[in-house]
Each structure stands twice: as C-alpha cells, then as structure tokens.
Length: 80
Length: 80
Image 1 (cartoon, rainbow over the protein chains, first blue to last red):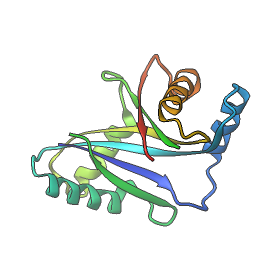
Image 2 (tube, helix red, strand yellow):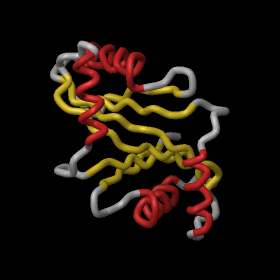
Image 3 (cartoon, helix red, strand yellow):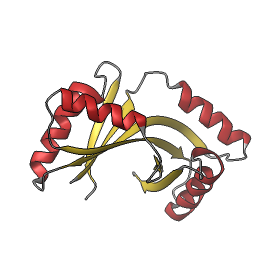
C-alpha cells in the first residue's frame, strides 16, 4: 500500500524557500501567483493491504520521525 | 485556486534521503516499510478560478522552474 505523508510548515512559520520560488516565478513572468509554500512529500510503500492499519502506521511514523510538530503540520494521503 | 505540484526523483535515481529515513524507521521498530521516497510538495495559490488554466500554468511553472526534468518527475494536483 502506497501512502503519502505531506509535511508542511505551519501557518505563520516563515518559508524562505517558498518566498524565493515565488520571487523566481514572478521574474519568469508568472504574475498571478499569490503565495508559494514548499513542503516535503514522503511516499511510503507499506507491506500491508489493510488501509486503516496503513494510515495508523503512517500517522505514527509522522509523529515519531517524519514531521517536527513544533513547526510542521502533516496530512496522510492514500495513493493506491 | 490551490494547486499542489508534487516533485519526485525518477525511478532509478538514487534517493539517499529516502534510504536514510527508511533505515531510521526500521530502527524505530517499523518493520513493514518496503520503500521510502522523499520529494517536494509545492503549494501554489493562484489568483484564478479557472481550473484548466490553473493546471496549465502550474505545468508551465514545473517545466520552467520547479522540477529538474533530467532527474525528476512531477504531478499536478488540484487542492481546492
């Protein structure tokens, strides 16, 4: 089972990488970009076919290792 | 309109960050992880309500700036 864990900086935490990309996009002529935030997408291939179990396990991994709860939020997405 | 551009290393391109996370997860006791790949998720807030136009524009941004076509693939996802 393929699970994506999307990790993003919390609202209010400065995202200099996103700011830089926003600026670069404007320089390239993309004028209607309001905001850019850059996060990580971690794709986990788990050796289980139980969707609920896979989500629970991914959540545990995110809490323990993948995300920093002080500055980051995450969301779990089932890919297939 | 909120668009996500998910950028990942192509199959066959070594992902040392993913390998390190895989190893760390095993050390933490998560035994049924088969594979971990780590990519970027870029969230774009575009000033348009036209879904097709937003997707086209995000694709152009990915081609021109966000992804490196030599080693990376990307997918576009409409968030809201």
